[in-house]
Structure formats: structure tokens, C-alpha cells
Image 1 (tube, helix red, strand yellow):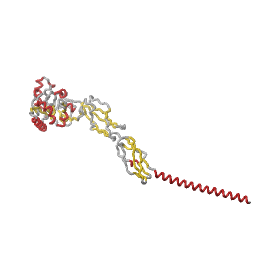
Image 2: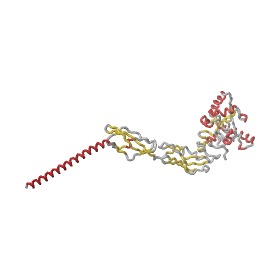
Image 3: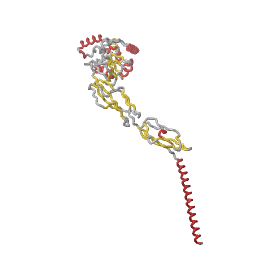
Image 4: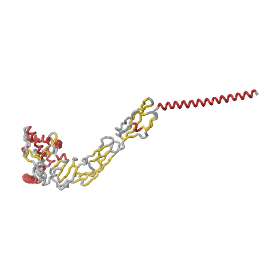
Length: 387
């Protein structure tokens, strides 16, 4: 009996020990979990938790700040928003400062600056007339803008024959460095130069805008008269007042230099030019191809904008007055209309006495270092009698 009781006591004691051990194990496990939670919470609070947008892209040269790409900050706040450099395409670092508790920490992420927008082509005109023979280079002025702010070259695509009359279509194409392209069509109507051309406008071979109005040619608003473009027989404005005023200023300047300038020919009527042409054609026996005079309706004197100074004789060439006129008339808005080395261009003989008023803006462009550019060269127009 005693041995049996002893066994029972020993068994109970072992069960109690196992129970206590189990309880202690549970207590320690719970304590471990609590400690782990506190440690994890401490570690969590010691880190910056920022939720960023998955798609962090922005167009080049578009204003953007860091906050645009942050959905939330778990345990802190953005100290100050910062601008992102979007001036060029590529991956850009964005560095911000986050306040966590009382501590300010640095945080970085990246943003992709992209360019998916095509350039914009602005054409002065999409339909133009050009004279036959006009080079392709001189299309309507094109202005290309792009969000990349880069300088984008323009190229022309399509077939174009400047010697084939009629409308032809070409395309102006602009492509930026990201491969985005824009295209715009231009209809080019090639017109032939004839004596009976209707009133119209066209681009010249040097890209200037020309307009035939009432049978008279204006290029960039300047009336041009030569062997290709003339005046009606009843066109008779007389001597232009602005031209006379400019001459007086020029003559006064020459007088201050000890020289005397006077007008020997100014406005000449259609009939007067007709008689003069018949006389010179007879004397020179040159017919319509005379360079000594032009046919009635094709003389600059009929415009009231041309003057013959001091003499119309060959002896005027080489005089001090002739040299002064050649080198200084541009200062007062005049051009030497028929230079010695441009006879083939103007179709007229050298006339050192003949000046034409065009205004100082244009005259200053046509004279440089003792050399004259003619209206035909500058404006890109011909000067020969038309069929």
C-alpha cells in the first residue's frame, strides 16, 4: 500500500512539473511575441515609408515636383516639395527630405522624363505659286516648335519639278531627337512668266513674296519695274514726294563735301519713253534688244521713283560726283540701279547717273563694301522682255 501511494505521489509531481513547464513555455512565447512586436514597431518607426506612383513619367519641359509622384508617407511628412529637372529626356533623381518624428532624413527616388509629343509645324502658307525655275529651297517660311525646345531641322519629301507647270504636292517633315515626327503638305503651283500674266502672287527664287497687282509687280511691297515687269500706259504719278525729299538731303550732304548734285531727269511719261525708245533703237540699230533705252512701260522713270543725276552722258563715269553717288546714295534710300558689272542681270547698260529710291532699309542691304546687289538678284526675279 505504501509503495502504491509513493508511486501515485511521484506521478502527480511529474504532472505538476510538466504543467508548470508548459505554462512557462507559453508565458515566454507570449513575452517573445510582445518583444518582437515592440522591436518590429521600433524598427518600422525608424524607417521611411513612402508610397510612390508606379508610373513615374513626365513630359520633357513640363513643370513637375516630387509631391506629384508621392501617394502617401506612412510615418512622416515631406519637409519641402522640390522641382524635378525636366529640361532633357532621361531618368532623373529626385532627392527630398522627410521628417520622421523630430529627425529629418534624406530620401531619393527616380522619375523618367520622356518625350512623346510630335513637333508643331507652322507654315506661313500651305498653297503657293512659284515662277517656273524656282528652287525647292524657297518654300513658305516654316516655324517648328517642340516641347523639347531643341532646334529641329526641316526636310522636304515628295517629287517636285520646278520646270513643270501646274500644281505639285510636297511635304514638310520635322522630326525631333526622340523620333516624334510631324508632316504638313504644301501645294506648289508652278506658273510660267508671260506677258499677259493675270494678277496673282508668287514666291520668287530667293523666297520673297511677289504680287502682281493691276499688272504691276510689288515684291515685299516694293514696286519693281524692269524688262519683265512693266506699267500701264496711263500710269502717271509724277515725281514721288518722298523721293524728292530724300534727294534734297543727299544733295545737301554732297554740298557739304564740296560737290554739286542736280536732277536732270525724274518722272517720264509713257509717251515720252516711247519716243525716246524709238530714237535710241533707230540710232543704235538694236531693235527691241537695245540696252541704251527700254520700251515704253518698262522704264523706272515712269514710276516717279527714279532720278538721273547731273548728266546722262558717258563722260559722267569716273567723275568725283559719280564716285560719291555710288558710295553714298544708299545712306539716303537710293540704289545705283544699273551697276557696271551687272549688265547681264539688269538687261540695261551701265548708268552711273541713274538712281532709284527704295528707302534706307532696303538700300542698306543692297550696298556693301563698294559692291551693289541689284533688285533682280536680291528679289530673285528676271529682267528680259517676255513673249
